Length: 110
Image (tube, rainbow, N blue to C red):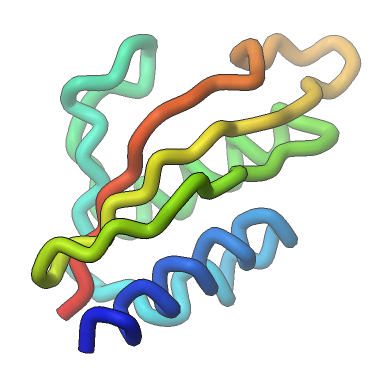
């Protein structure tokens, strides 16, 4: 099952890079929790599926180009941990976070 979990997360990141929100959320649970409680910046908090969808759409709107570069996929039970570097270029006239930016993502697959 864990390799299947890795493939689900990998497919989600690939869909993100294509700006394919439907593909990105294909395996998302209706009770998805996006935990940004330890984030730096205005997007701190814990969000459900609707807020997460809106957050992604707003992020894509701010960038002319954006993609995640996954460095590895680490299986830990139901968790898949993915260190990533975000690369992007903001749209003219829209302030966007500087890139590249490295962070670690974690997904629970059930």
